[in-house]
Amino acid sequence: MHKIQAFDDCVSELSRLPGIGPKTASRLAMHLLKMKPEDVRRLSEHLIAFKEKTVSCNICGGISENDVCPICRDSYRNTGILCVVEEAKDLFVIEQTGYFKGRYHVLGGKISPLDGVGPDNLRIANLADRIVQENIGEVIIATNPDVDGETTAAYLIRIMKKYPKLKITKLASGIAIGTHIEYADEITVVRALEGRREIC
Ligand SMILES: [Zn+2]
Image 1 (cartoon, rainbow, N blue to C red):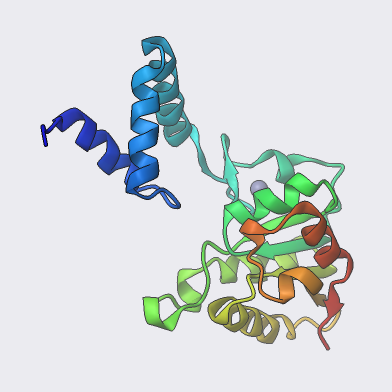
Image 2 (image 1 turned 45 degrees about the vertical axis):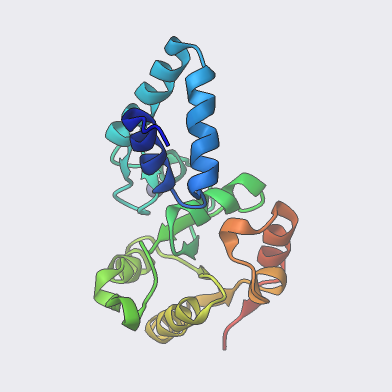
């Protein structure tokens, strides 16, 4: 078959994105070809700007355009409650429900011995600092319900039991029976938050 290098390069780059196989990548590449040149340019400019202007919030570790994200800056949020998630994408899903009015703490991954990720590679020490400095009353553990997520939750519970006044809760129902937060619908996320149970 006749080889078109620019097409192959485009498909190969798109295929590197999560959830996009070679077939979808080819379809997207063909779609890009049909788009107006100015629309393709705008798309590529937005992709570059998104990457270059986005940083991690110094407080929660979520994504931000400034040192401190809008959620951490928002004085109307409940400052006594933290929802601990693995990744910024989980924060995004919970935030979209509009149900949770506290603030977040993004760990930046989960404990995974097979991948060489230990507690020191995550933002766990920062979490302990925040519990004290921000006078946190409740921590909701919202790690994912897989082996590494549960290992991480168990580790966090062990660390947080050192704070006698701290209420430690964990997501319930839908999330707890096997759905990753990333793929959960809004109702499932809200039910999991509402039904969170206290760890004793
Ligand atoms: Zn933040």
